[in-house]
Structures are given as structure tokens and as C-alpha cells.
Length: 177
Image (cartoon, rainbow, N blue to C red; front, side, top):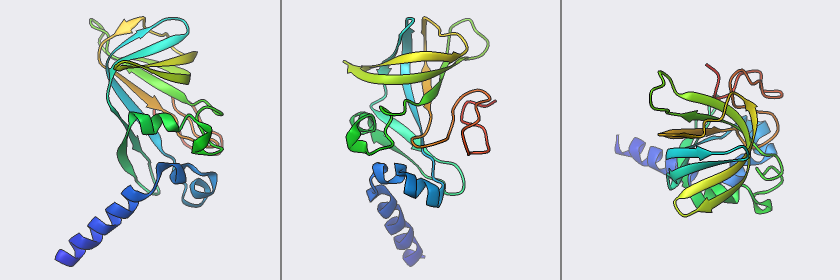
């Protein structure tokens, strides 16, 4: 039993030691079909026609994948923001801005408000994270309470949002309900 625990611990350390950037490369994605998606949570939201502000955003961003290889974990906000730079390689968010589904709790509403957007140009402002956005589907609330942003994966294809089909993926993205 101890040998098995040591093996599992070693395997987890090997995965944890793998830089996220290497999991995003097209060659790795094509070989293993790993598609990492991201989730950011915040205490609230403020938005206008061009920007959305995640108020008091969590200091880590959650990432996960689906079959065939399930991977999950979290990275610091600065490490996530590096995925928006050329240093992240050719498949970075800056070159190919991701779609995202914004889920916002609005007091007095029976269900969370879901809005599909393309996000770009993230900027940290104190404890907030501000994105520029383009509306794809739904209506952007001007403000709200607890907020989660479900972000598309890096690389060709993919998709996040209500009914969005990614190119070559053959299944719906995170926001499908």
C-alpha cells in the first residue's frame, strides 16, 4: 500500500511540475487531446459597454480538462496572466482571445445571469481584474454579486458558451446547459 501511495504521489508531482505552457502547445494538445479551460471567481462584477471588472478576484485561477485525460489544479493570477503574452508561445490568449461565459448572481433574480463574451486585455487594478470584452450572446449586467468567469481553452478549436461548438471538437463547451 505504501508503494502505491509513493507512486501516486510521484505521478502527481510530475504533473504538478509540468509547466502549464507545455500543456497548451498544439503538438501536446493534438497528441493527448488535453484542452485546459479556466475559471476565475470574484465577489462581484461591474461592467460598462466595453469592460467588465471582476471585483476582488480570487488570487488563483482554476484550470481543468475533460476526457480523455482529466487534469485539474490552480495557478496564481500572475501565472495565468502570462498566458496572455508572447512568452506563452504561439497559442496565447493575446493572439487568439478566448470566449468566456460570465455567470453573475443578481439579487432578486431566480437564476444566475449568463453572458457569453470574447475577453481581451486583462489588467490588474488593485484587487480587481478588468477585461475588455465583446458581447457574443446575452445581456451584460451593469453590476452583480458573486461572479464566475468560465474561460475557453488555449489553442485551435474549442469553445465556451451556450450552444457554442468548437472547431473540430465535436462537443459543446463549458457554458452549455
